[in-house]
Image (cartoon, rainbow, N blue to C red):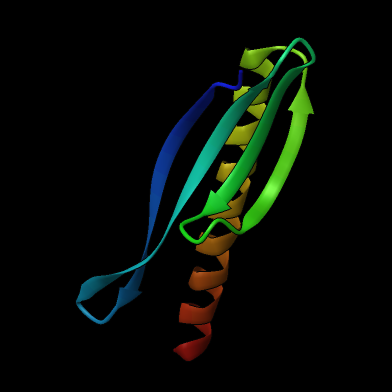
Length: 87
């Protein structure tokens, strides 16, 4: 039997004075019987951006959240550099 934990994180983009919703990402932890834990970072449509496998659940949670943080930080840096180039 497989167990799954899901953590949702929203990403918003800037548009004028307001904000618009860009997407939702989630970290999914799935228990793989006696072998360990699989982690995945997916968007709302199910597209996988990063995945991996760890023996311990805390390690899988750490690596999944680390991958999500990296993904969000790169999106922020990309938006920031695009905004500065418009000036």
